[in-house]
Image (tube, rainbow, N blue to C red; front, side, top):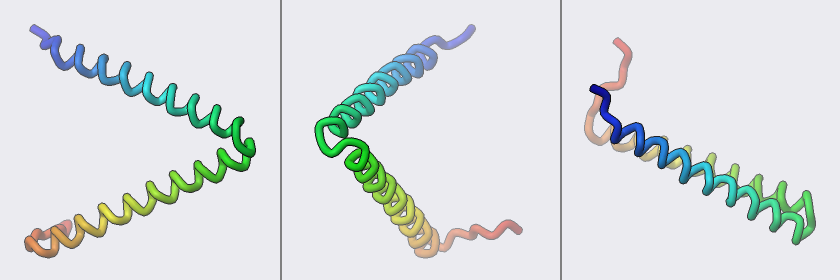
Length: 77
């Protein structure tokens, strides 16, 4: 028999995240119209992209340091 709990939780999570993304995009769009228009929206988008790239690099560096400290072997052979 199929377990319904994961199906319900995944559906709820998708609904909540979808709603949150909709309102986040709407809020940023409204803020962009309120400020200098397209330039402000592009500047905010560039800032978010830069922070995301820096966060990914920091997580990668942290992972690399932890792997080296613990002596894990990541070679393919």
